Image (tube, rainbow, N blue to C red; front, side):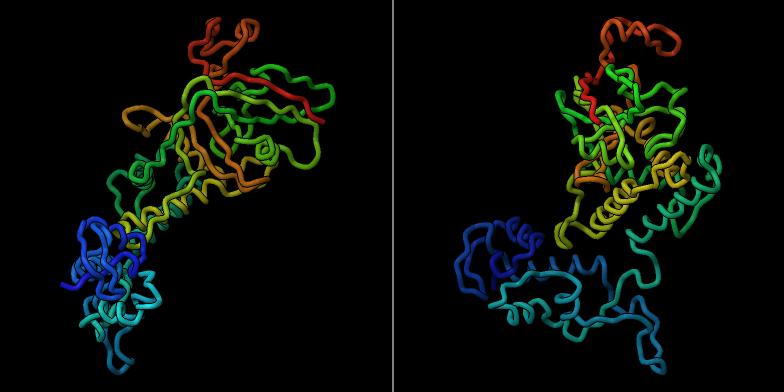
Length: 387
């Protein structure tokens, strides 16, 4: 049987399929002899290509209305070569492109394709609409009891808020977005200084007590403190200080490993042929989700309603989500301010600070004095005052 090699079809997903066949032989196109895992039967590769294409495209006769008086199919239609050259990327060796395209098209030359979701939302569009609906709900209709509001309700065009959070959690696990920040990692935090201020302790430079957490922030509403930090002083400064101001820069070190939802790293961007359609579209949604959570919002004294969807998401991942049976400790995202570093919101309070005996004597948790040796401590502080 004729074979094709991974040098002639260079798309990453197709190359992976060829490798899985563990075949050997001479390529029909370049005539080179391929070792095991570098060639596969041409028919099997062609079947793989069209099976994957069939997850996103369909026979126009199965999907679109047809009206000869209006010019035929009522929607966009593509022939097989259009699909292969304009809609998916085969990455064919240019020296053999014409012959390979002819072989892959085969007897499908007159086939009329259309988008499988021409009249309904794709998986990505469904999740996108669900996110927009979620944002509208928690901003303007229900913030604390949307679970009870949803009971008995269903929508064909979007997921209701609780179901969207659950589906997002599934995608986070599916794409391995929970990462571990190792013990000994450094996070930078900046606090604005007025003339005469002298912030020198972890209590002064760490998260505020609940009665002082009076402003909404990206991931927390007023009254629920979190620890915000960054991977560099420059990012912490850009996220905290507007204009020129004196500030104290603190360096916190993690004393224990910290599990975080990592939306600041390389988010999944699989090739069309590497994963099935649902997984590809789920990955596309995660990138939109990460971008939405990182969107810059005006830094002023207003409690911005734009923060609310992020705060609900953070609360879900703080209190409901479990990874391998355990809670996670925070969220990482790529800052849109300053340089291109990442910021963190750790679900940490003052009780998570490693304190000196003197500092510990000042602190109570739930009305009780904090033990001198704080076994919960996760963050050790050092600081520098900067004009």
